Length: 318
Image (cartoon, rainbow, N blue to C red; front, side, top):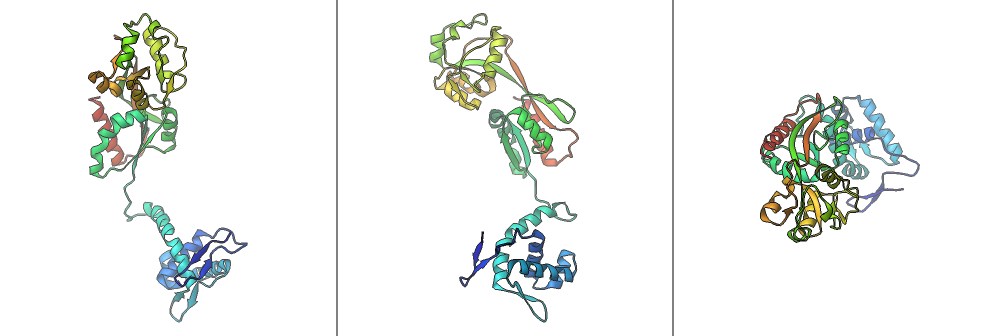
């Protein structure tokens, strides 16, 4: 395939002649240095290679393109219109690559790296992100990913994340976890359903038999756990609505779709306002502990430490 470029005069240049594969990035980097310096010798000094090497590389690139790139002058070189068009195409991406490659060189100013945080969508939205908001004024960059615990912990171990909020405590010594908060689960519905269900006790879930269940997943993981813990019974039902985000479950139940089990922190405003009703009072409710997890022995970065400390401090009031 030919990739055409047009210069200011309307001439078209084909930078990928038939029979030529991908152009070598090293040749393009050398070409750009020569184009900017207008000198083979100066470009060689900038790149830390010999002038004959620069000359040979430009000859190779010209041969691959089938085009003359530079006119040799008594002092230096003059780019052709082909060279100007090629430089315009490659300058920005090569400069971006060079900036990334130079980050570890001594004396090079390194752009701030974001802190990559993962966790359940609901906990991130309701708890973590509001707590972390003040850090942006301090220059901390955040990149946040919502997902399931197993996937996020695998990503943490692989280096894709700096910190993960997890409802699972990781095994092994490669990940270090500290308890962050306890989630108390409550059985809730809108007032109309609560009135229809009537009084409910921990000894008899029978009144809930024909009530639509709103769930986070098809296999009702949170509901099943509540049934085992509170009613000492096995739940066997098909959910009426499945929403893989507890905020969506909350919205559906508040609108009157049916009954569900939610973390209390997620629905405490609705319970306080009367938009939702807690269907049964439980002395020993199901509890789930959330952990803040990081790689054990990871090199400390001040922004990561700031995020960790902010979350731990905020969790004291959660």
